[in-house]
Length: 277
Image 1 (cartoon, helix red, strand yellow):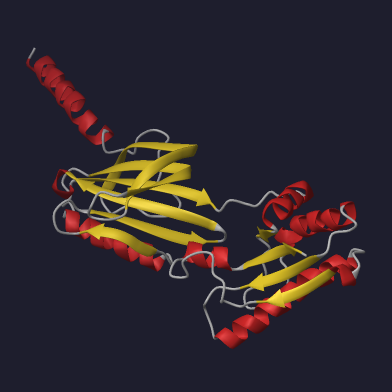
Image 2: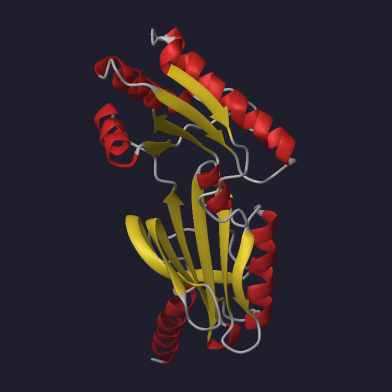
C-alpha cells in the first residue's frame, strides 16, 4: 500500500511538472522570423505569419503611425523559467543594434517610459519594417515585422499616351546600375512599352529627360542624367525607332519631385521622364 501511495505521488508530481516544461517549447508551427534572432533564453508563446497583412508602426512620441502592408510576422516571446529576463531597456537597445547591423535605421525609439522601437531596412527593392514592444517588465516582448516590396511599375503604352495627352509628360521608373547609365534588365518591359508607344503613334515626338537624386556632386549628376537619357534613346533606336523623333536632356538633381533626405524620396527622384513635344 505504501509503495502504491509513493507511485501515485510520483505520477502526480510528473503531471504537475510536465506542463511547466511543455510551455517552454516554442508554440507549434512557430519559429524565429528570418530577419532577427530571438533574445537568448526566451521561447515563442505564439506567432502569426501571413502573406499579406498590415501593422501600424509607431513613428514618433505623438503616437503617429505608419501603416505598412505586405508579408507579415507577429512573434511573441517570453523568458524561460529560471532564466533572468532582459529589462525593457535592454531589449530595446539590443534591437537597435540588430537593426543597424542589418543596414537599417531606427525610425523611432522610446527608451524612457513606454519602451518600444521601430526600425526600417531597405534592401534589394524591398522595405522591411520592424517594431519591438517589451512587456511584463521585460519578461516578454512582441516582434512585428512587415516586408513591403517596393511597388513595381506596371505600365502600358496606352497609359503612357493617356498621360502625355493629359499632362504632357510621364515619369518612368527605369532603373540603372548604380552610378552608371546601364539600363537594368528589370526595366526592359518599360522600354518595350515605349517602343510600342512610338510605333503606335507615328507622329509622336518626345524628349527623354534624365533626373538624379542629390547624392554626389551636381556636375557629375548632370552628366549622369544626360548619359541615362541617351541610353534610353539608344535602346529605342536599336529597336527601330527613328532617332530624329527623340531629343534628350539631363537635369541632374535640379528638379526633385520628393524629399532627398529619405531613401524613398531619393528613389523617386532617380527617374526618366518622357515629355511630349
